[in-house]
Image: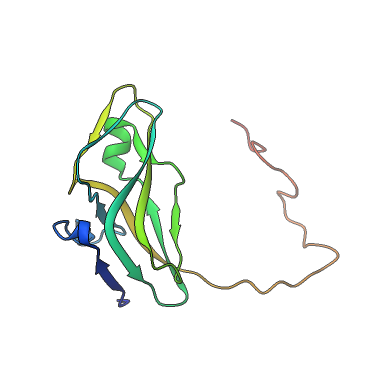
Length: 148
């Protein structure tokens, strides 16, 4: 199933590739940085990286911004608020909050693939207030209840 999404290139994103699937069955579209100059992230440092793009999602959908596994594993670079959310009513520039969890500086160049973006349906919640919830075998077991 395809969903049509309007996309707008901003002035500083005119030379950056549009988000693209990098394999036939990839779930996420790779997002590229739109930078005037390279950004160097020291270990532990956070930066907000512009993409030079804005979108108009149809109602009932969101884009989830997620780390690229290769950058996370090889360089320790990940999305600080993973997954980030682009709501259907947001019309501003898509920006990616990155954090360097590695032990070396990481340089981000314009055009570099920095994150991936997954289109997801967003059903709306309709609350049904009750006095008791149906029991389950787990019950109220919270964090770590199944062991380490």
